[in-house]
Length: 156
Image (tube, rainbow, N blue to C red; front, side):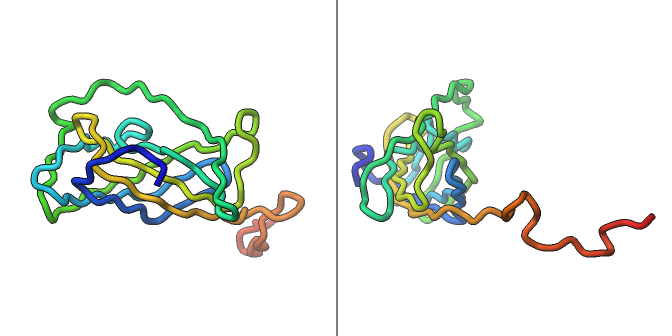
């Protein structure tokens, strides 16, 4: 991967991936490979969990993407999670990835590279995930693709 240099002390997985052409989200799960992996339980995007690179699926070419800055309150002692070997922790995290005025439209399929930072700011895990744009639930003309049931249409 072309992402952050990392000393893997944990394993990182991404499940239940959603991509709508603008944002990418999913459930990040981290498992400790070493004893006492120190994490920030808030799993903040672009602070604890970083989006390091985005490529298009078809040719693997890098694409421009949004890198959001976050300025949350500093980590407090109650935000510290010490994960023991063999245990897992997970949280849903979302990233804005594309914004038409700045990056153009997002491709139909992306390969995203993520890294996980420890409570102390060190890279402890990386993961690569592939996501395909989800079909829109609205079809032509702005009408729902499924007809509305007559019982929901109301009566006069």
